[in-house]
Length: 622
Image (cartoon, rainbow, N blue to C red; front, side):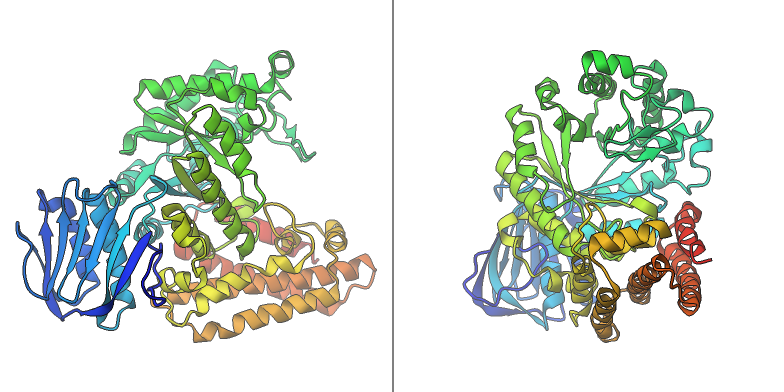
């Protein structure tokens, strides 16, 4: 960010170029938001949003002229007025404010910046010239709605508003079995799925905010929720289960048999019903982690032609189906990264999704492979919130930063920030706010946002907390995972302890070099982090819920420490009955609070499955 002063305002995302002029615009209590546009209705919603951040006395008017007087904020939609389709120029002088864009989306993004400036102001705004546009044309968030949690519509609307305020322009709801397909009720009947009507409503809500709601339906791997039912098991590659590359034994099917014509018929039928509910002409078909391909029905074929070839043949059949519908296919690129020699065979009118969730993920090397074959691709990091409860802050920020840097270097056309729900989706949604915010920043303007004060930005623009307490608390609680020397990928040791059997806990303790002393140190650190919570000043309607969510997850992490100390005693044959009694009572309280927290933001379907993991944790104590 270019600035003539060190007092540049903190914005999320930080604009690419912001030059302060050294004086102030004193905005009056009343005035006119003037729409200068060939079709005023194209930017009327943006004007309404801006009006909502001002006093009630500001009115909206359309006019062909620039307007005069100090009470003017002019929204100027000028075809060709700025270089970039999504870009804008914001000019704040002592006399007036002018926002210029060549497309309605640019006006919308400029209004987001202006609204944040107004929110930070005490009646005056710094005079400035701000020129801004995005690095990545597509900046998305993918929310997992298939690992137990399906958000309520109000939760989704609130999330869209938050993301749109940060100039995120794509949303995907990761779906395995949580769309209410008419002919497949057996699969979703206990999941409280999204209905077609709800998708239509959400799509319209997104479009108004320049967010593309992209359909997302896994179509090859991750089909367990389908293949465990009698009607579909014959479509499984391994009906009786499989073994992962790292030796985990699964006794249920996971992936479709790609050579069975009925497999393609199934996914094609899903597209028939799903796609008409979305205005987007894209679809993410997943096709990741086909772990067991070649372990079952196609063992001989895979041995003969290779697993990559069998995988690609099925992918291309889906591609042909979707191309005939006029849709662009997105797919997770992990399998072809194991077969890079096949990447040049991909059509150039699909989009590969290069994903990885560790700070050390080789985005640079993987992006180079897609770029060398001129295959359009997104970079897809993540919030690191899943399998952790409180997140992995440092890992998330570096993963998000690295993805943006490598994506820009190799010409990625998009940035998709993923938020998963593995192992019961225990983490509350606000745990992901830091990651959502930082991802929005580095995908909008990498250089301007790489070193942004994300703690303060998240406090203000995610939690609505002027005290800065919530951003700092979320950041520090998310870094508790660093207290252990053991850093398991894709989760944290404190989370793993909660979901491990007693016989495995002592092993984890030895691996992590966690002892009673270390547990007590972590407990003291949790207390220090949580102490300022009562001083927070959250200005959101769900403030009490956020406080309850973070208090609960801190108590869950405390329970993890107590559980490990119990396991160490158990391993030594020195079990303390009073500690067991305390853990049982604590687990009961945590489960009761989890129920309340869950239902405040999510539908009932899936709760039973998620809670069962806590019930299993509690059962170990007796």
